[in-house]
Length: 216
Image (cartoon, rainbow, N blue to C red; front, side):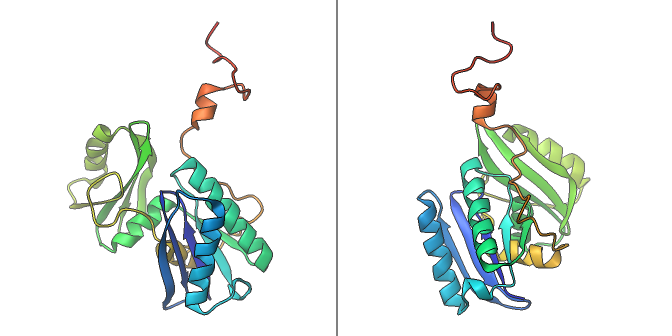
């Protein structure tokens, strides 16, 4: 199977085309620009892989958590490509993809910058999620991880800490999707945000300019 893997949870998008055994093309893309730029980057990766979008067997998307805007752009782009090609869309956790990229056995902690003085974090033991994905203060990460790791050696990865592996790759997204349950989320798929957006916090009634409910 040939799968396009895409992750836009951070300011650096991961894009790749893989088959069952090989990485046909892999790239990183500055995701701070326009959606059109992302489509151009995806097209370039497909051309390097020697495959047209219609020849893909599936599209895989990193569903987050991460940048709210980035996740929405990525999900919409992936849905558009999958819909146009008549192929399924598979979703995986962006934190799981980040941990997968580490290719390190044992206990891996994926940590991404969540802004607002917080981070997104998840722990994996030999690729299996331990506990649940969390959003928390950086100072709370170490105690939380220590409790879950239970004395096991810990490897940290992610853009919220100093490490070589900083953002999820398209390869990891595609590989995890290939190994997963192949649930098609083309119709109902949505990003995983974990926490409410800034707009939801500021305007709980959904009306710009509305006061918070607890304000009089």
